[in-house]
Length: 350
Ligand code: SD4
Image (cartoon, rainbow, N blue to C red; front, side, top):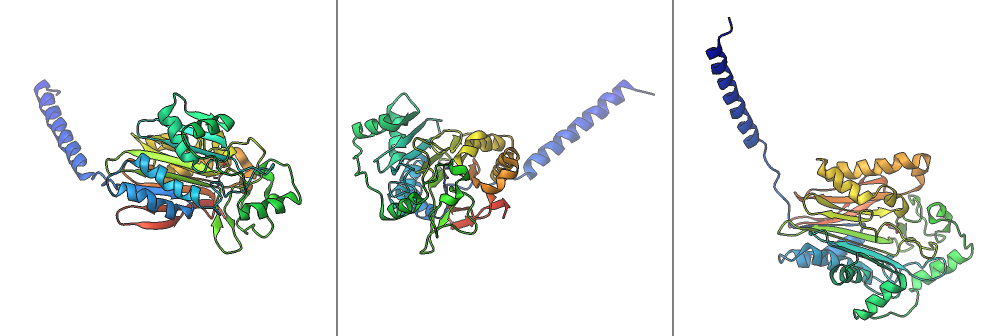
């Protein structure tokens, strides 16, 4: 027969057992040790950029300073595709985009910026010195000059000039997404997937249009930066994902940070970096979140996914790092206290 006193006794015992179990579960589930500082950046130029970022991080510096200093290295590399040494647009002008975001969700960006060597630093000034997030074109240039950035000569680098002359032979005015043939003859690798994919140069080096970097400093704060010349021979005025907060870059100091590379139009379509951070917020690892966002783009593109490259690179608040790409060939550079390496990202298609 049901006895009230017995019931109270048994339920008290079982709640006690439950509480003990619960606390045992809590203590046995080890919290992962946070890896910090950590810096990661896209493509192989990231190895050199990470070194500069590390100079800031190793001395306890702020992630924001690290991600600015880091990508400035790549912006200065004349024959790289990122800064003023990059391939021009179809009218022969190099136009640059960049964005930056810190641990307080402050953000700044510049787009369609010409003749300024360090767009990332201008983006930071937009963030810190204006009430705006984004400045473009002649307005961005005017602001840069007013802030003391020198106006560089309007001149193509030797490599870019050669590439442009080559491109002019056909001058195909097609949207870059389908303009694979417009890549300079002899510079298209077998694994090339569109004009946003890495290009293997005759000297064996790889060239990229973009560097994205995210970092966590010794205080556990996150920041990110992204800087690019966009796509070579793009239509004049075209912007990709890199200067768009939430697309090419997103930082949420409670959750993690992400940057994107590849075909910007398709990253924008899914608010790519923001999507990855939100997926991490829901509990996915950085790698799983990047994979999920890549798959979302592939579902949208259907058959056409085979012609494009998109990759995401992310870090979470524990300093765990992950990346995923549509195609083989995306690599990222990583630096921590005991690791410095170039990692080949996982991918969906060969
Ligand atoms: C863009 N996402 O402008 C950039 C290009 C890029 O390696 O990442 N290239 O669309």
